[in-house]
Image 1 (cartoon, rainbow, N blue to C red):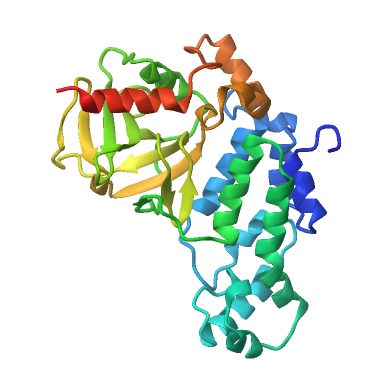
Image 2 (cartoon, helix red, strand yellow; image 1 turned 30 degrees about the vertical axis):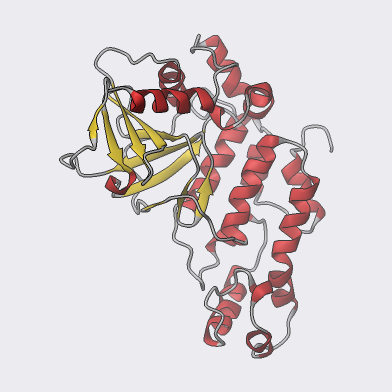
Length: 312
């Protein structure tokens, strides 16, 4: 790997799929993306991908291919319409799995071959990756471009960008919550799945309200988000809670009316690779005396949620 070049950038270039220049600059940690508010290039890359994640997957819309530098999206949409008309309802996605009859109905062309090869090229990139943080982004990209069926609980998408931001300071509160510390006046809600297991920890009156961190995989628009993902939530303020907690309430995940993926937090990766993955943002957390940013894990936050649920 060339000095200063992220392995995802190299990996996609190697299979003939150069990433969008902005995404490349983010992953390569260009100084413009390493500011107090933006955090670091890796964080910015997850924000960049969030704009794609939060859009519904449509069979004839090639917007998601905008993660690449020069993919011909209009021509792809024309092929997608032909595939749909021929009976392949997923359009350009997973054209490698389309029935032979659907493929035969379309005039042969190099772009159709590229679409059919896309999943295998992404798989090749995945095989060559060595870093945990790279694999996280690769999985997001795969779900956008070559999706498999997800078992993660689905959250309804939030169509409009919320007032809740994705600034690099959200971890300050979640690090404290992970250690059982809830600042005066703040509340912490836990959203659970049908079996009562914690999925999301939401902070209220701690910085921005209705900001939540996943402690288990969830999905938005068919894209699986890993534990450590930061989301904005909307739900009826009068929705009845399942029960109270010492510092908040328990809600069923079905209570959520809308959710929007904001970014991955530093808790999305294991502690030992955090400085490498989040570089300037992690260093800022240390300088800012956040609570144990180098050793706290998403498991700590999950244990807090589970312990809160166990209290009676």
